[in-house]
Amino acid sequence: MKPITGIIIGAVALLSVGATGYWFGTRTSQVPAAAASAVTVKAERKILYYRNPMGLPDTSPVPKKDAMGMDYVPVYEGETEPGGGQAALTGSGQVNISVEKVQKLGVKTERAAMRMLDKTIRVVGRVEVDERHIHNIAPKFEGWIEKLHVKSTGEPVRKGQALFDVYSPELVSAQREYAIAVQGVAALKDADGDTRQSMQQLADASLLRLKNWDISERQVKELAISGAARRSLTFHAFHTPANGIVLEKKALEGMRFMPGEVLYQIADLSSVWVITDVFEQDIGLVQVGSKAQVKLNAYPDKPFEGVVSLVYPTLNAATHTVPVRMEIANPKGLLKPAMFASVEIQVAGKGEVLTVPVSAVIDSGTRQIVLVQLAPGRFEPRAVRLGSRGENYVEVLEGIADGEQVVISALFLIDAESNLKAALSGLGGHVAHGGSAPTEQKQPDTPMQPKSKPAVVGHRVQGTLNAINADGTVNITHGPVESLDWPGMTMDFVLANSSLAGNARIGSAITFEIVERKPGEWVITKLQAAPANSHEGH
Image 1 (cartoon, rainbow, N blue to C red):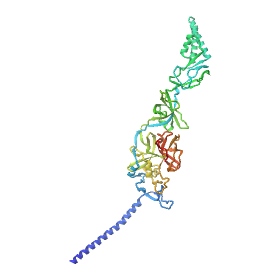
Image 2 (image 1 turned 180 degrees about the vertical axis):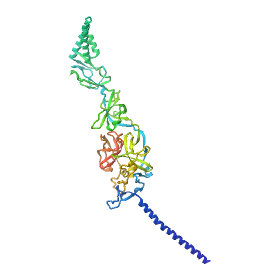
Image 3 (image 1 turned 135 degrees about the vertical axis):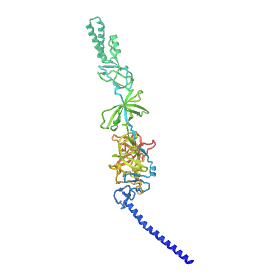
């Protein structure tokens, strides 16, 4: 039995040794094959660019070394940036961001759609007297003022109200001539026809002369009845409209006046004009009959409705604005000449056009970019050509199609996370079809960067809006900006788009964000009214 047991044990040992050798042989042949495959895959991967080995915001399209002699690290197509969760830039110019990161950024999208693009033009105007309701009181004869019945500027007058008493030798002579002519007509009632006709013509000529001097019918009848000329006559405001006021008074008791000299200027303020200056780029939208709403600081809760009655045919060469006139009913006299007013003119669009929200457009000053969401976490920058701007939407003439989803929030956060500027560098003239590899890449902050000046995209600032300049810039007095080591100062900024300042009032506190478009040129990308208790800059 023992020999048989030994034979069995020996056979099992030989089988074990053979199986072990076969297993090692198989593994040895597989390892080089896998390694060779990995090298082949690595060799086939496309290098997009080379990034700084220390994580600094510097890239190169070709291999290079940094100041310390370290080689720049290649970034391959489809490879994510260091730090985990960062966006990847694909070779087609698209931007990939993890869905989790998109949710953290608060990215929101909206569909590009056809809509009627209405717009509200907001301008500043001034109240002026309706020129059609201004009346000058200027006697047509020479004389002296003996007594004033309306003695001060601003007094209300009624139609037919007595203004002043006058003495004029010419007037007395004309009265006597008319009285004699009337008496002659009566005395020659039995004379022949030619004699009566001649006397009647003399009486008519004398009467016409008095009427041309604005002598009232009542006074003429009294003169014809009494037959006695009066030394002094009362001059009535029979050309004055009802509810008029005295805008100007030059008449003084005892003064001598000459024919045509203006003694009073009276105006009816039951209807007034509001004149405003509309910028050249908006004047094509304003039409006669457009509705307007006028607000005044004196009555902040009481808007006045008006209608555009005239678009002036001239342009102010200094400000490149065109005056626009609106008529406003003023039955209670609340609107007073020379008041300043805030005016909103409602203008209609030219029909349904393709639009995107204003917040979806990144305006660099030389071109406009919209970020299109192709799929969850995948975005593509598109250069677009814009048309008319509305209150919240802007017309898109080229670059996107109806129904495409565009990013409307967190644009600059996406820019920081996905190195959007590198993607935009490949747009060139064939934006919609992708671009070449980037030549400049913006990297996320690393501990190697100075903490005193972090690499941020936008800087949040608080200040006061002083003016909106004619060239589209705004003048702002702001507080210190710690992220830029700026002290408080007053300076001009460029707006990313002109609608940003639409809801801010001159002199109001504002909060805004700025980015540096190029060295020394700071662009406002966001502007809103600041909370009442906010006074510090950031």
